[in-house]
Image (cartoon, rainbow, N blue to C red):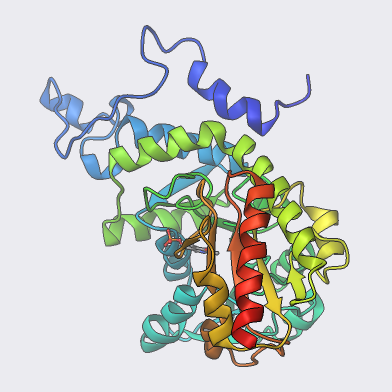
Length: 390
Ligand SMILES: *Cc1c(COP(=O)(O)O)cnc(C)c1O
């Protein structure tokens, strides 16, 4: 029989036979201390963890589900998506090492690299967000230890040839860590493409309801896995059983929400493409997007987040547009059931090479609302944009 689909496996994990009479979902076990019956039992690892920091039933079930989704031997949970990216970098670099990453890397990760890590002797060099795998490989130097991949990148959504980049890095003994939040572990499987570590913000689509912060780190290579496990243990990172339980609940419906939001996202993106107020929509699943060929080659789905570049105008007009909307929330993050919109031009100031854009850059996240009604809301916003321009 062919391996089951992600959609079925995420649910079959809950109904698997042999677990005895129990609820469909694991219990939320709040525990620091875990008791043993006999002193000798305290040394028997087969009886489970002896301290809450190693996690109880809900963290265990979530780790197993995410590892299965990412096709990984090991999974660790971190208190945020940010920590899911920073922990493997901390684990795998030493003073004197160098990290290569995209100039369009997720902002807080950039801050970690340039502030925390550089103060500890690990430097970072940034490549162009649309660099080819060959161009990034040509930057590998004696000190290069790790390449951090984000594809599509944050805010400007450039695609990388991850397979070629992982192969080129591996050939030079350079490790690869990928931020896989956009694909949610569904639309792209980094480990199957030769990447060493796949990190995700479960905060986004897995959580799916904008009510928790959590990250996952997946790896299979024994040495890489050992280094991550040691760092998690040394720093003392753990997550609450309640948050793990919520993320697990989110995972059961993840494939349906992801696919539906992708469909709505494309519908809204296509509508925006035809509007004269808009110079371009940046969305790798749209034909004609520079990232579209790589996206169609490697990805089986798309996130419902994309960039919109206004045609000329001003930041003030962009803000009038956002203020005129009534269905889009004004807030950061994405992957939840609700549509969100942000004005992102100020974030581009941190880049070494600021992209040349025709006007203000907006970021839209499309939720589970009726896409036609979202489009009507955007139409009202565009009227406010035009009115603000006089
Ligand atoms: C949101 C996000 C993160 C961080 O997730 P948090 O849980 O909010 O810390 C990391 N990477 C990407 C690409 C993100 O969008």
